[in-house]
Amino acid sequence: IPGHPQPRPREITLPEIRAVLGDCRRCPLGETRTHIVFGEGSPNARVMVIGEAPGKNEDLTGEPFVGAAGKKLDALLEVAGLRRPDIYIANVLKCRPPGNRDPRPEEIEACSPFLREQIRSIWPDVLVTLGNFSTRFVLKTDQGITSLRGRFHQAGHFLVLPVFHPAAAIYDRTKQASLEADFAMLGAWLAEHPDLRF
Ligand code: URA
Image (cartoon, rainbow, N blue to C red):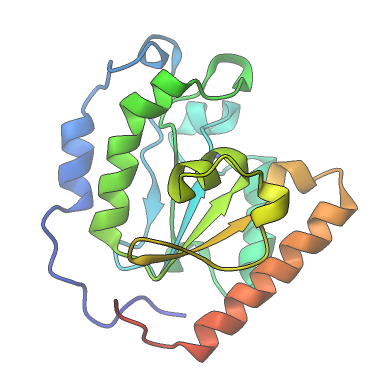
């Protein structure tokens, strides 16, 4: 499924956002990371996938979702008829929390303006939020992923599809089945709305 035939007129491009981020030291994760994981994919994507934070492999390579969760994500994208180059992937935090601990509120506050600008630059039709942290950030809710997943929500201009984090499904067959159902629903929605332009 290709991106939008014409990019929307942008106020800011992804390389410009990356340049402002620079060699970021806006929070203490700047001292412990190896690489900033900015995000990757099509600047015209209809689907933007938002994860939590880089893990070990992502920190080492600078690329999002290159470890076990990334393999799982690739299989789920295939269920929706999508491939990595079709979409854009970014995380709420751009640096790895030590030992993969949960993001802290002050880290999210320091980092999330960059995610917000990425969303505005790409202007996707659908934001797929993986797990609690990205879902809460996008939907501004305290509700958990279990009650929110599996249906579309609206956040400003964007449709939001919250799903379980693929890492949580690696040893949980019930979550795996939910993820497959949710990505199948995403694929069906994209096919039914081939050129939705907000
Ligand atoms: N998990 C995430 O949430 N993001 C990544 O980039 C990798 C694993």
